[in-house]
Structure formats: C-alpha cells, structure tokens
Image 1 (cartoon, helix red, strand yellow):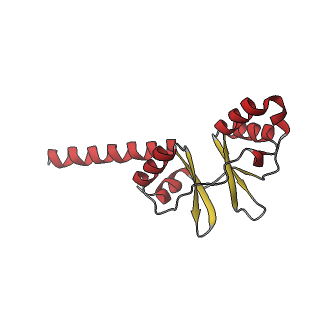
Image 2 (image 1 turned 60 degrees about the vertical axis):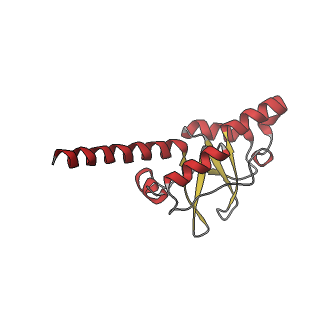
Image 3 (image 1 turned 45 degrees about the vertical axis):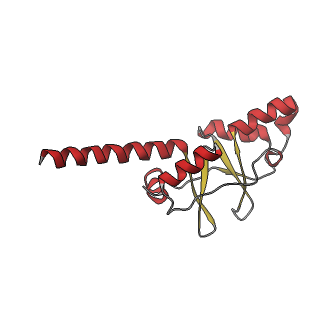
Length: 142
C-alpha cells in the first residue's frame, strides 16, 4: 500500500504550530487533539521541524519547570525525515524502525500533505494481510 492510499482513508489534516509557541501550549495541543507529534511550520506552511511527546519529556527532564514557557523551537527536531505520497508501507516501516521514528510528515510537490504515524502503517499492513488471506481462501475454495 502507498502513503496516498493511507491518507485517502485517514485524511490529510495535520495539526501544526509555529516555532515560537511555548512548550506548554504545544503539550496542550497534543493532548487536545490526542496526537503524539506536531509539525512546526513557518508562516507559509513550510516544515521547520517536528516535536513529539518524547521531546517534551526530555525537555522536562533537562530544564524542569522552566521549560513550560520556552519556545518549542528550542526542543524540536530540525532535521525532519519526510515521505512522499508514492512511498510504500514497506519503505515507511524500514525508515521508522531504523531511525526509531513514530511520525513522518508527507510532502507532495514541496507542500505538507499529511502525516503518517506508525499506527497508520501497522493498520494498513493488517488490512493488506487480511485482504490477502481472504483472497487466498477464495482461491483455494474455488
């Protein structure tokens, strides 16, 4: 399955934030939307970074209470690994496993087009395997 098919099923909405928003406001946004990562964008929607729950936990461990008011750009990952709509779930699994990542922004023609989580990839693989098993049963039964 390709990324574009996953996005077709789940939608392409991405929760974003500007780099100057506080870490506390970022945590609130993650909680409100029940997500594990936010894409940090510039005024034109360009990807500047990504911040995850793990980044916030590390900030609390490193800076304590004072991190709440710090801008999220201080802790975001700047070297953002992305994927394209034509990438396959197999390729995403390789990237996510090797680099220990749980979220990949999707870039299409230079623009943010969605975000794929490890949960999305696992769900799509389960659906593929179930479909293949059903096809095999039908083949054997005929």
